[in-house]
Structure formats: structure tokens, C-alpha cells
Image (cartoon, rainbow, N blue to C red; front, side, top):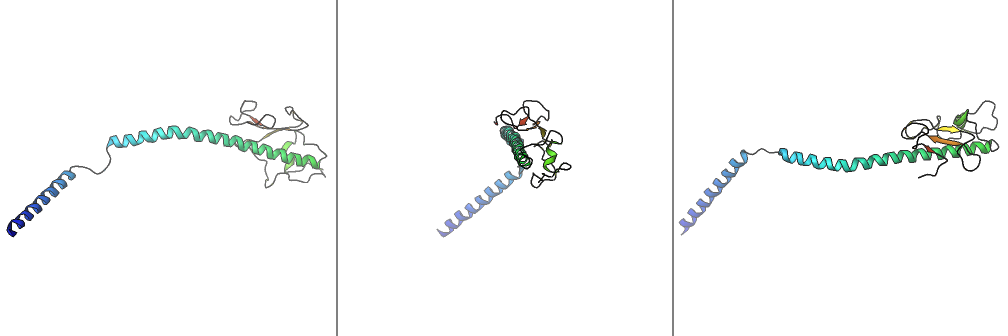
Length: 170
């Protein structure tokens, strides 16, 4: 009986060895890696995701630039108000314009600037262009204020995307 049991055990071992050898031989024919179809499928999925995400990011960047320019215009208005307080309610004329916020005009005993903090240069809009300034303002609805505007994303004066201090902010 023991002999039969040993023979069965040896037969099982031989069967396991043959099965293991068959698997090894079968896997040698395969290469490790991805098939072309798998790679193309992944690329297609990435393309779809990029097509959905990129336009959203670009739209947010444009709006962030518009908001930054509006904030800069508000800062310039505040600095101009401080200048006007020191100059008996008078804003600087179109020429010399915003420069008087950082550098005094000749013989200006009332100048107590610079009126823009931490700035040796005038701020630029989000697209790197100087802000435009006109006083007296021709577009203000109320009071005696100056017009301040950016040419906006298209960098062209007088177009619909200009950002200014006289229209309702969207």
C-alpha cells in the first residue's frame, strides 16, 4: 500500500514538472510589454481628457488676467485719490499723467508720494502694456474722475475687450 501511495506521489510530481515546463515554454513565446492597440487606446483616452480640460484652463487664465487688470486700475484710482487729497482735490492732468504717482513734478511742494507702494515703476496690465490715463475723464458718469483703462487681451485701444474704470464690472 505504501508503494502504491509513493508511486501516486511520484506521478503527481512528474505531472507538476511537465505542467510547469509547458507554462514556461508558452511564456517564452510572449514578449513583456503593451500591444499597439493598448497604447493607442491609452493615447485616445488622454486626448479626450485633454480636449475637455485645456479649454477650461485657458478660459480661467483669461478671466484671471482681466481680474488682475481691474485690481490694478482700482489701485491706481486709490493712489490718484491720495494724490488729489494732497493737491486740494485736483488730479494730475493727462500729461504728465500717472508718472506723478511715483515721481514729483518740478516745483511741487504738495507732493507727498510716492503714492504707489513698493513700486519704482508704474504697474502694467496683465498683458504687459502700460495703463492709459486721461484727466479730465470723458467717460465718467459721476464726479470729476480720471479715465483709466487697459487695452485688454487684444492689446488694441478702443475695442470691446478694453478694461476700464467707467463701465460696470462684469
